[in-house]
Amino acid sequence: MSKHDNIAAAGAVYYLFGATGDLARRKLFPALFSLYKEGKLAEDFAVVGLARRPRTNEQFRQDLYESIVEFSRNKADDKQLWDKFAEHFEYMSLDINNVDGFRELGNLTERLDAKFNIPGNRLFYLALAPDLFGPVSFNLRDGGLLESKGWHRLVIEKPFGYDLPSAQKLNEQLCQVFKEEEIFRIDHYLGKEMVQNIEVIRFANAFFEPLWNNKHIANVQITLSETVGVEERGGYYDKSGALRDMVQNHMLQMLAMIAMEPPSRLHPEDIRDEKVKALRSLRPYTTSEEIDANVVRGQYSEGMLKSKPLTGYRQEESVNSESVTETYFAARVFVDNFRWAGVPFYIRTGKRLPVKTTEVVIEFKNVPDNVLFARRHDLSPNLLVIRVHPMEGIYIKINAKKPGENNVVQPVSMEFCQSCMIGLNTPEAYERLIYDATRGESTYFTRWDEVAQAWSFVDRIADAWREGSDNLQFYPAGSWGPEKTDELLASDGFHWWPVNGQDEDNVIWISGSSN
Image (cartoon, rainbow, N blue to C red):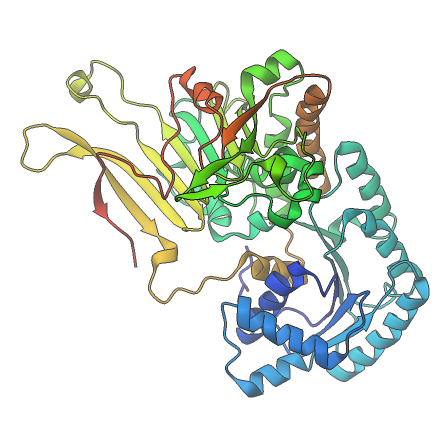
């Protein structure tokens, strides 16, 4: 959103709590290296890796190097640049429950400030379990880490609580130490290129926004599908499930960006205000009857994917053999405001599905029956598809005359494939979000009232399930979920449109990609 997206961020000390964990290795270290290599981190920065296990600086930097080699989109092929980068990294073993360790961390910080001429700015990245956010925040305060003259920012990962009461308790703890504007709650989906592109597609194109309402849109479909199972996360996932793990954050955030009103200014708070209004307009489902009519709750059983046999969820490691945790969630959701009244939003997410993809499909209303070409042809609806992951781009389907035929109409498709562009090496989501947090750019971080509204919506469904709505359905691993998911749309006269990776029959391509 800034006019200065390519300038180096202000110098700071970055504290990575959980520095020996998987998130740091796969995402955070590569993100910092890419920012440095592309000139978005100046020389006045330092990174302190913090975890319980003992490591020397040399061992930590070797871990850093191996992370970059395996996971970074940029290569560490310039030894001089690498050595300069690695010099900024130090490691400290820390017991996060011992405030004396934080005082020692303060002494290390003073040395780093002097060594790299850092102006007192602090960014604390907590790649930790949520129940540790509060204790760490208190010890940062009591250990003197928040007494410097520069800015102080706290970056925390999901899950932000387990339900609304636990999220409120957690937020109250954080707000005893940090101001709301200093808290950056990461939802990495908001860092994805095409999610951020939703605003541009809507508000920078004159032929979309006038049609972006219930007079012209028949339905919206949001799919976030995964081919993997729970893998080694069985213990965590069995206490969470798809509703809390994916819907409360990723899916409702994408829905809010599709449904929000145009902000009065391109200012973070104005944009987030409109997202909150959209979330407040979600029609709540509270009774078992409403849940059964509008929500599909599924769990994968044994199945096949690409001729490979797959185990069922209840046979996964660390999963209860009688678990009723959902690995699949689909719902018909309504945004009850003037713009969207009556338009169903169909959302679905699940594990062990046939294709890994994240897409938003906008289906426009068809032309009136018995008018012109509609009299003689079964016209296909116009579609706008925003492809978020792994393919990034925009797909549009329209109707056109078949070449050489007399008034024969056929669907044709046009696509802008951003991820297909030759030589394109797009930044990862964590690069954008860390860079934004360092600059104080909060647009693509979730504000507390967004979190609270999302939990309020999700908790009503979870409560209905807990009170005896026995609607868990099983689907074979490798399928598209329970049959009821298709019935959800069919009852409204719609169907799920194929996502990228599925075949779509009878579509002619005008252009494969744009370069």
